[in-house]
Length: 315
Image (spheres, rainbow, N blue to C red):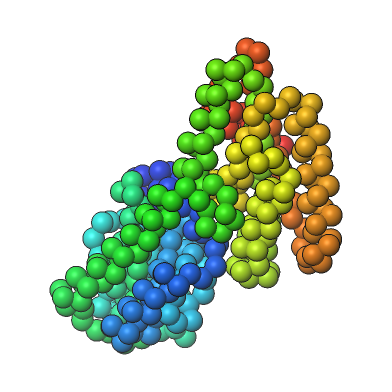
């Protein structure tokens, strides 16, 4: 078995994947209908849409019984992302990259595998749509073309998610929407010389909640936190969900003293609401704070980087 190499643009690729907020999310019909279509079209054992994270393959949608995630070094898909071309394996037991792979020699008995890369809008390959079966088979050019067509539909759905300014899970602004509205608010505060604070929230243990209670419960935890943010901050504040389990609030015309008081009351609300809903886990987070003082600049990137740095320093 040959371990997959890392793409030359790995850092850019991982960053793009995380900003989509698609990892560790629940099933969605817009993706599930495409895997069902692929399984029916090719009469295969399994069809899946999967993404390659830094250390794992994570399956967003599947028609079959494949695990939701496996180590990256065992992943067929991790080889797919090394190229822009389809990967066709007619008999994995005869391919030196996969012959000793547990999915080939184990009870899954994978022999045939075909996959087309899935690209982010920036051109990096973040995953694949793939099919596999337990018997060797050919995959003619017309089948490759139709699998590419399905991959195009997956990319269209991902692009629609990215273009939207609203995070579908929490109802808050996504990164694109937050960036625009927050900078507009900062520009107004700059003109009027108003104080500004930014709070950056990093939720803990979402991956553990997914593993222990399932992805739907992890989604509920994220949606619950978004709901608490809406109730805990003012209508004039700009609230957003950034990459996966990262949230942010920009508070215009807010003194530093008022910000600390708001964050204290918000923490109490989170703890109280968790008990009221009888959650069998704790919604915990780290928070970083940045602000514009008399000598500061009203730049969103500067505020975000300062708040992120504070969170990292606390770990």
